[in-house]
Amino acid sequence: MKFRDRSLRELAEMVIGDADHFEYRSSSYITRFFQECDLDFVHDGSTRWIWTSDRLAELLNEPQSAAFVLPERFVHVFRILMLKADAADDDAGRVRALDALNKPFSREGYEAFYGEDDQLYLRHVGTKTVSTAANPHRPFTPDELSRRDRLERFLDKCSEDELIEDVLLPLFRQLGFHKITSAGHKDKALEYGKDVWMRYVLPTQHVLYFGVQAKKGKLDSSGTSQGSNANIAEIFNQALMMLGHEIFDPETSRRVLVDHAFIVAGGVITKQARNWLGGKLDASKRSQVMFMDRDDILNLHIVCNLPVPVHSSDHRPLPGDDDIPF
Image (cartoon, rainbow, N blue to C red; front, side, top):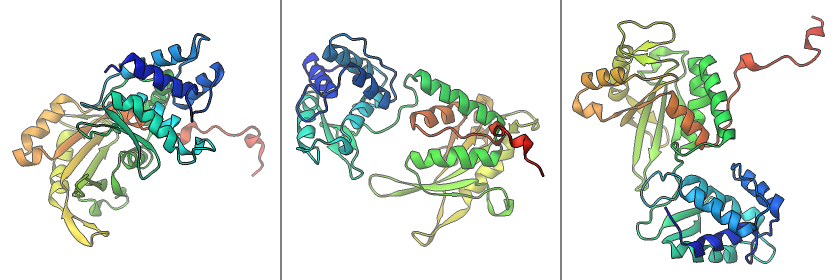
């Protein structure tokens, strides 16, 4: 994606505060602003608007998650820039700042607006497509790669319940799922093949229901389960149970069927396992089953900017704990 040089300059001048209704930022404060945006850009002392314009152009060149959607990190810069908490005294609701921001964006076919949550959003004028989706395929910063490594180490150590409670539930909440209910593993008889059920409300207000079957390790198509690796045949019946049993939604006071099933693995789901399950399910149920493996979990967790959980074995005793008498 490419913006006109004129538009990039105007946007850059707003970031550095050379435009009305925006906070002025010197070299060190420009660096600090980009750090607040989770970017590792460091101003090199060159002309402020030229350097900032070049950085915005870099962000625009990152992969888009869909047509007419601006790159996630580019959008995030302006979401931070337009926080209502940073409003100037003469522009309490940031109305004037928003009008100024929309001049270069409208030139490129986009419109900035505040949502009901008072966060800034950008949409394509022609298609009304809103640039909101986190893109798990974008390049990661060094800090994000470090967090990804820490999360991967957690997945190596965690139990199945910890995978669900500490990783999957916060992730699905962040992705916009509602009424997320975990069955847990205390009463297997009540699960009916589901570790988690949840619902997702479409823009049309129609509701889809999802069931999640989670396994800690690798899912493969070997004859038997070995260690933490699970045989895909073991979750075949669970997937059928998931799609065939009703759940009760207390908010609507009615029983509903699960529309789609997520099979989630804290390890790898092999291609052979996916093909085996696809061959066992009939055509209608095959379209209802979706897979998430370790890479999907890691990438989504990082782009959603969720805190990395800490395994209990990583807690070290405080200095002097060994001296406490019992």
